[in-house]
Amino acid sequence: MGNEAGLRTPDGLNIFSLAIPVASQIPQSVGAAMAAQRLKRKNAVVCTFGDGATSEGDFHEGLNFAGVFHTPNVFVCYNNQWAISTPRSRQTASETIAQKASAYGFPGVQVDGNDILAVYAAVSQALARPQDQVQIRFLRDAGAHSAPGHPPGDGQEDARIGLHGGARHAHRRSRRRPSACPSTTV
Image (cartoon, rainbow, N blue to C red; front, top):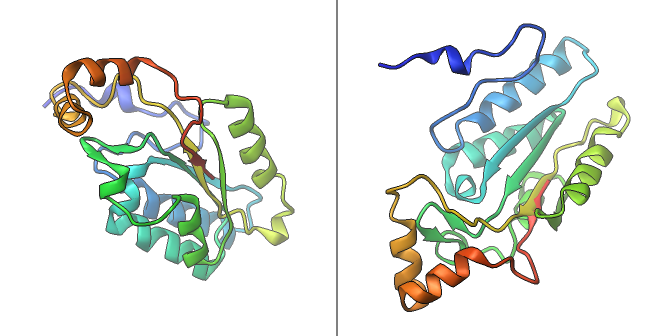
């Protein structure tokens, strides 16, 4: 079965362990934020996920719950334009991932996910809001270029070759940093 000790959270840290199923961490983070809210704790819960998670039911259920109950969450979506082997253009009709936030009653912000200082500033601004206005529920569309792709054997490279016309082009695409980076959503 393997050794799960590597996933153990050190004592004193308020973090969840790694979630393997896509988007399953989103409703859990909303539940943790609601618990903190009910206990009148002055903290927020930051949840990160990839753009493929935005096509899952857990994404919609979690963000809807966060919007309805005004939970103290910050959602950060790393949009690398690929949901494993599916390009973003085939998983959503939304122009941006950030605009999905408006359906749940909170703002979406788009930043260059390759600019760590921009991501840090946007999340810091969200967390700096007064706790009595805990509408920190941003969907940050943090576009980041994915050089190596997902886990080996996922078929992503084959999909990229098929979509972009040949291995040579796919290899070049995976090595370059785009001049206009896709977005990161907070």
